[in-house]
Amino acid sequence: MYLLGYDIGSSSVKVCLIEASSGKVIASEFSPKKEMKITAVHPGWAEQNPVDWWTNLKLAHEAVMHESGIHPEDIKGIGITWQMHGLILVDKDQNLLRPSIIWCDSRAVPYGEKAFKEIGEEKCLSHLLNSPGNFTASKLAWVKENEPEIFEKIDKIMLPGDYIAMRLSGEIGMTIEGLSEGIFWDFKNNCISEDVINYYGIPKSFFPEIIPTFGIQATVSATAAQELGLKEGTPISYRAGDQPNNALSLNVFNPGEIASTAGTSGVVYGVLDKLDYDKLSRVNTFAHVNYTEELTRLGVLLCINGTGILNSWLKHNFATSLSSYGDMNDLASLSPVGAKGLSIIPFGNGAERVLENKETNCSIHGINFNIHTKGDILRAAQEGIVFSYEYGMDIMRNIGMDIQVIRAGNANMFLSSIFRKSLAGVSNAVIELYDTDGAVGAARAAGMGIGFYADSKEAFASLERIAVIEPQLEKREQYLEAYSRWKQHLKK
View 1 (tube, one colour):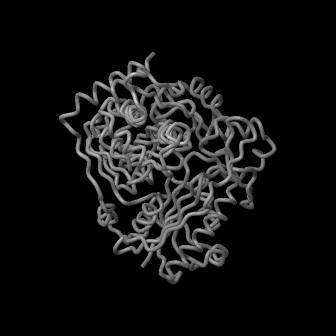
View 2: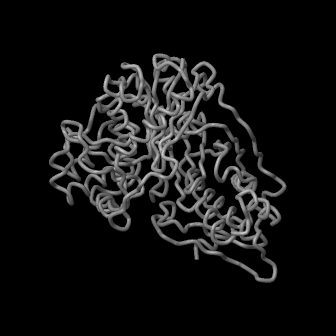
View 3: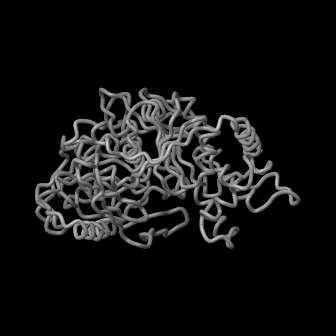
């Protein structure tokens, strides 16, 4: 018995097949091998054609099926995860009306800021747990004002994973988690937000049926079965946005549990059991995968744009003589904690929500030509990224998060010993590394959705923890001193 996971990213689509009883990955593939095209007609815009997601899903799926050699009837469930906050519009015949406005498109910022003020900041935060910001609802408001001929043809709106489910089944649905990431969900009244849709002038008929995150949401149609080589009637039994799903992939379901990623941008995602929010909207709160009207489980999301992109920039522009990130880490490890008084502010990848949408750019502070080396700069960069995480986690602690253990996949910046030890050192949290990814998590969750696993404990019993990094208590004061110095430079 097998389970499929589909991960719809903005760079590629990943497909993973696991054996349900053991949780073992049987086959995994992604497509395309080069990053998917993102169209930017104007500065700050970012669009993708959802048909490209489907095309690449089929290519990766075909490779997985070929490699595994299993029979389609042995696949008992499909889980889907996706790049959050994208907007997909279809007409009554399920035809796409325009390309998807994806997560990193910033054209809707003025619409969200205006709505925040005019609906009322306190009302938005207490009911939506966020500012409308640049999320899906504001993107739809942009379409209404700037493309009225398209707006008039809309039958249903979707998020990227909902579109993939529609292509698989012919049916359109949306979860509460999806509605919350679009800033359409009123957490106090447990319904689609009347404030948001009335303010933006969005008909309630645009919203599809609300479906559970886990459960038989739809089944594979005859058309999709023929396209993909699946069995007609195979259940689609789970869907969630990428950050809640990444947390699920690391078995993060309960209050106080924390997940983190550190790629181009970085994320810390923690589970909260009460309606709370940051008054300055520097971190975002959404429904977690196990949120229900009866069980409050919220995901508090800290996103740092300037993360691994700083390390990448240094590799390609500064440390060009070093052949790999491993070589960079080795050289940085020769520098002591605090990098001999050197501090780097890593925010060079656009406006940072954690800084109230300010764009500070990256900067180096305290450099001394007589004592500092290339290794010091490389270490200060990694510490600067870590300190940006700690800065955001301080905000999360202020709204009730108790950060004692941080779980992460063994990838990207978490491959660096300096990064791991620095994060443990400054946060005083234990870092646990696991061998998993979003597509694997979605496949496991599909097993929960069909009831093969009794609960999350059973679904993730085989999750492999490959390393534990304890805080170096003897160096804690050094980390805190370096962090304090970093914060002083940030405030200048």
